[in-house]
Image (tube, rainbow, N blue to C red):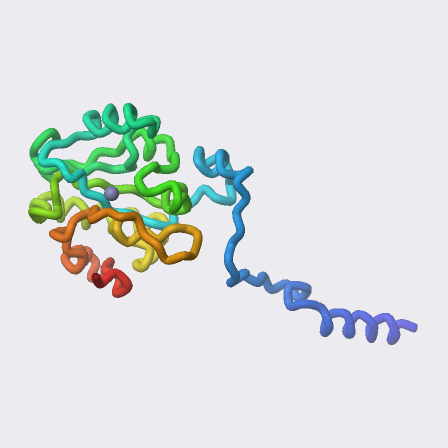
Length: 210
Ligand SMILES: [Zn+2]
């Protein structure tokens, strides 16, 4: 009788999915989200979706700028305040190379820095804005240095993959159409190749070559 029980158990284990043997399987398929959960994610209430997956780089497209100036501008536009998580000053409105966290970062809230059609990048994307019009002129040396440092820190802390660090213009819509927002942000003078971080790992994604 004992033999039969053992035999049956062995058959069950051998024929069960691999998780029955204590191995956790990570799904490699697409993750489906429900709109009902959006609020929880937006305010990062959900333990499951608390993390940060992307870093999206922006420029202000203005010569002058600061957290407070963008905050009131975006507030008037109905974004509930500044769209980004970090702003890096250029000496006009904020110190050159100064990094300031916004209320979104302090409260670990979602951003409103890309199109609503790319909501995953708002919910899970850290928005960093460099003050300046980087379509016309490169960021200052101090800004580039500060950006590299910030990227290095965020990447390490949240295990963000290199391919998930890109510019606003590279963000694709979430409908898998491959469509992107019509924007030049963060400007062609922000050279992703120069964002080679201090620790020699590259932050430049080969997918982002224009
Ligand atoms: Zn932008």
